[in-house]
Amino acid sequence: RIYQRMELSGEIERGYFVEGMSGAQFGLPEAVDDLMNRTRIGRNFSDEIPAVLLSACDPAYLFSSTGPFDSRFGKLTRLPSNYAIILDGLPAATIELGSKTLRLRNDLGKEEMAKALSALTHLVDSPWPVRPYRKVQVSQIGDEPIIGSGIEDMLQPIGFEKETNRMVLWSK
Image (cartoon, rainbow, N blue to C red; front, side):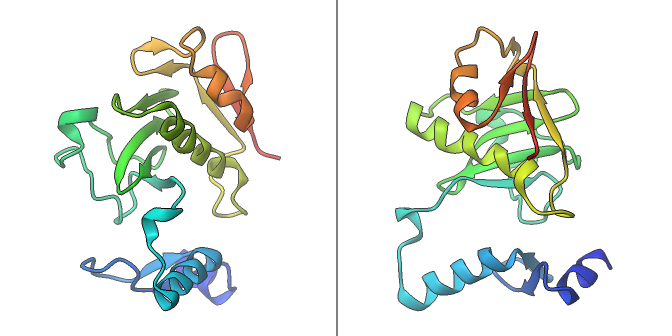
């Protein structure tokens, strides 16, 4: 019902965007327009696709705890506070907001890592009611503290602020 209301108000659009997935799918109008434009003019998606932030509860998240991502990265429980960052069709990172834990795939280069981390801003920058959080906190990178890990230097340029034992991103 919430999606139907959002669709009627023009906040999201309904369609079938991912081939092979059943059921109605919803997207922000700008994302739908981008998909339609790419399809019409035959542009290659891999040329310029940004990292995509996806809720672990989203039906489009195909990498469940039993999927191919499990063996290389770890399980991501399907909770509303858990998100995956998809880069080039595969999960590059996950963030578990309840435990304040960020995990990055081990084979990412610095450029790929920066691209993936930039998707975290969507947690606080998306328009309401899509924006789920006013503040995102990260205190762990995998099993290690975030402070002193070197990753904080990659989080600061995208808006994270260093606090005593964590990095914090606030909505604007």
